[in-house]
Amino acid sequence: MKVNVQSVNFNADQKLIDFIQVKLDKLEHFYDKIIFADVFLKVQNTSDKANKTTEILLSIPGGELMVKKTCKKFEECVDECVSSLQRQILKKKEKMNAHV
Picture 1 (cartoon, rainbow, N blue to C red):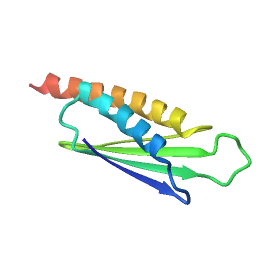
Picture 2 (picture 1 turned 90 degrees about the vertical axis):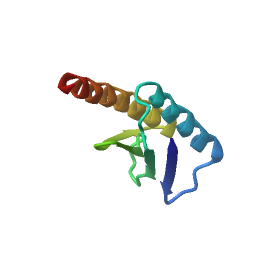
Picture 3 (picture 1 turned 120 degrees about the horizontal axis):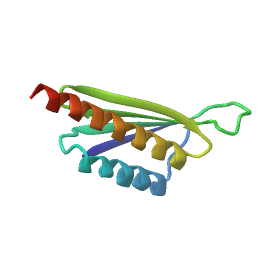
Picture 4 (picture 1 turned 180 degrees about the vertical axis):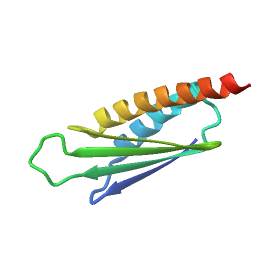
């Protein structure tokens, strides 16, 4: 799966990009027809400690799945996003199998 990582107003280091790639590759165990993933990393200028936002747009045949989380660390956000996407994928597969 092709993963596009875009970091807004900062440069993401290679370790973070590799971490994101590994986590998103695990989604292919649940659904092997994923086309690509767009990942947007943003740091918000707030006094709140949880100021890191991660958005993941997953392109699959017949539509797109989107999830957005805000946490203290990008790794934590990516973990939450991936688990949320995993649930969405399983739901979508159940609906597709119900129609067959």
